[in-house]
Amino acid sequence: MYINFWYPLVRTQDLGAAPAKVTVLGQNLVVFRDSQGRAHCLANTCTHRGGNLAGGKVHGDCIACPYHGWQFNGAGECVKIPSLGPVDGVKGGKIPGRTRIDAYPVQEKYGIVFAFLGDLPEAERPPIYEIPEYGQDGWRANEVMILDVDYNYERSIENGLDPAHNEFVHPTHGFSGEKDSYAVKPYDVVDNPLGCHFWMTFDSPALQDATMNKVRNFDGDLKAGAGHYGPNCLQTWIHMTPTNWMHQYFFEAPVTESKTRIFFVNMRNCLLDPAHDAKIHERNLVIAKQDIVVLTPLDPVVTPKDMTHEVMMPADRTVVRYRQLMKEWEAKGWRIDAEKVAATRTSTAYAIPSPGRRLHKGWVLDAVPTTVAPAAARQAAE
Image (tube, rainbow, N blue to C red; front, side):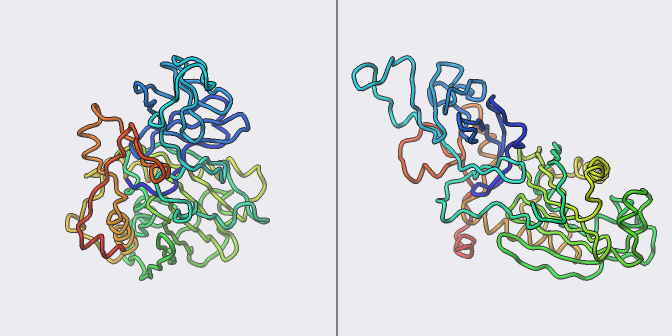
């Protein structure tokens, strides 16, 4: 799991007046809206006595801890400690700066509330992945689908980057390995900012579903591609015919090393009538469940630390490139040391370091530990 990337927290429609507790990168966060409806994301642990902020109430522009009523604004600053009495320059006591908690940049896009979980200054942060079709004429987006799965997010992303699994996992994508002539066709991996992608053609059967067969009325091969952006954003592009396309985007939130919450945005330029939304949703869910059946029991849960513990094939070249990029981000010191966190979790409250840590000293919560890459790997990344 990596800091310094954008992660989905909740759907826009699901964040109302009450605060929400969200776990991402193994750390608890609180998400709330202020009096103007703006979303904010803070570390969930109160710096007083470890209170669960998400269990409190929103007061105007602040979240109040349910334990002793301490109030924190959207910037993570403590602005009220009730036990001190009124703080007006005469009565009460001064609120120490160390009471602050980590606050993370937030954006709402595609019907999703995202937070940048890391300490990079704004000029150095990568943007949220841009869906080029979103809001464009001739395209329709399904309502954001949420999938909670019991497997590691890297395994999930790699599955989408793997053209060989379709033949065996998805009956409508191939012939279940029954054709002796089956082979993954050669393809090229193309690097793009913060990721890579590929395109290739698939020998795919006619679709049996009457509605979906309307968009696959074509005798040629199905053309499809997949790519990733950062460690946790997957794109798949499915061209059923030269003109009928579905482009799919998966924004994945690693809850823990073994649990992932996936926010799925499906775009299509065919079957544009809203009456088809339910059928498209149903079809996507069927395919997702086919992947879930295969990915849930993978052993080990987390991808191996090096590729000598797996036998890779030419069809895996996009997966290999994804892992190489992950090593580069680890070399920057962005990979969370999950083993250390697990070993100390009951005695230490951690927070994902926020941009505020570059501006202020004296934080109560320890920054979540990250792995230290070998010097050679660090130099290569730089």
